[in-house]
Length: 114
Length: 115
Image (cartoon, rainbow over all chains, first blue to last red; front, side, top):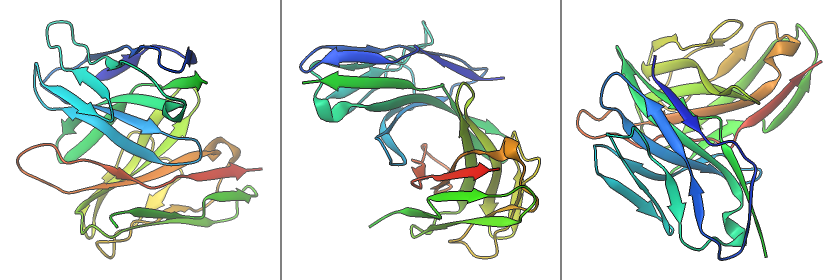
């Protein structure tokens, strides 16, 4: 079945550092790809998404490009802030019959120090 | 404000004592689902519902029940909880668009401990 693999954490960076969190996927079809973020004590929030190859999703300074040739959707930010400390999840959207299901990576914890 | 509301946020219970975790959304979404989140396993889908009175099993349905009597509510029922159901639970909802990929909205989570 479809699957998502993302880099293990925790990732610890200093403020204003460059961030990359790697995400690769396997899928039989052409899934949509997502990054969700989970801030401490809160639920999951959609950070950005891309629905087809070469699409770039962006939000709050974060970007990710849907690369079909490398089956990747790496998350990047040029200058992280302390407020970006959270757990980041890569996911793909899979349709199985009537079920629209999200397949998740295991999450990458990011800690940004001042 | 668009939101998915779960209750309770935290629950400690004993083995075998029936419990219900409620989930309500105010966005008139057709599609709702429940996930559990466990260390090293990520999020796994428990049950989903395409619309009122339409529910089906996800990947890990054993030990759980759901109902969808109203569009806005999708409670998760544990008839006889066991310690292996100790987990963090999330409810999610999204619209059932034909075109495009709808965003899934998540509740804040329910941390359940079964002793």
